[in-house]
Image (cartoon, rainbow, N blue to C red; front, top):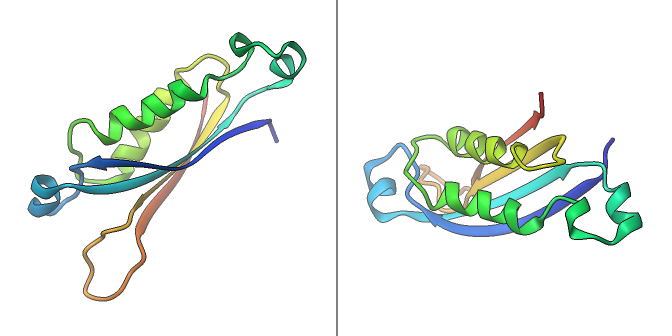
Length: 120
């Protein structure tokens, strides 16, 4: 397994969902991103230029969740993965996207999707 950079519990407000009220009222989404990359050079050099910049990973997640509405969590997660994979040094990424305020006929802590994508 490759080295990892993990950003967990990022919270953003967005307008994603299949129900009309989700797209008009919006809600909070929670995102975890695990980036796989070779971190040896950064560990030796102590230079930000030799690693994956956490701020860019955060910005990618934020811009997608706060961006144009999507119906499915799957589509939101896929777009985040695509943007993170475009960053230098990223070999693979795992995206966990949770919707804490999911509307169901009974109690549910959250709905979520988890995807893993690799650079080609």
